[in-house]
Amino acid sequence: MMKKTLLLAGLLASVLSSVAYAGGAQICAGNGVSKTVTKGEYTKRDFSAKCSANITSHYADTTLAFGVVAGSSKGKNIFGGGTGGGGIKSMGTCDLAAGCTTTEVNATSAGLALTAS
Image (cartoon, rainbow, N blue to C red; front, side, top):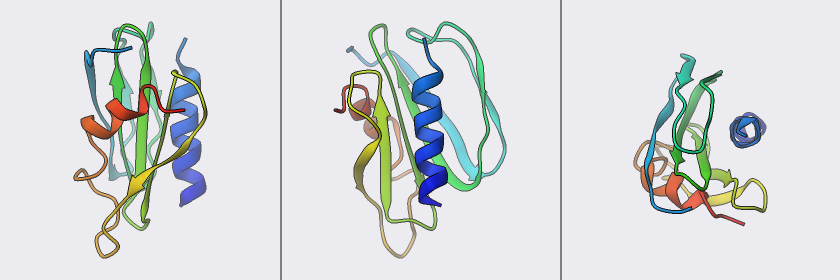
């Protein structure tokens, strides 16, 4: 699951063409249903995100940066990255009993990923 989480976070961060938080939303809700992310401040085109079951993800979009975080309901870490540099990295841990939920994967953690390096 960690590979899928890293792949999702990397794909979303690299597909896009900092730092007051302007927009963002949940992308994947853990049910495997894909979602179209509409253009925003930094993103210039709509794109479709393929969501895997058990994965929750959230993004933040500003005029200067884009960040995304993701975690698995079966995992213990949140991974994220953004256009601010660096790469995908661990952004925190989740409750071991419940796995990663919207408690950890949310607008706040996505905002931190904007400039994570």
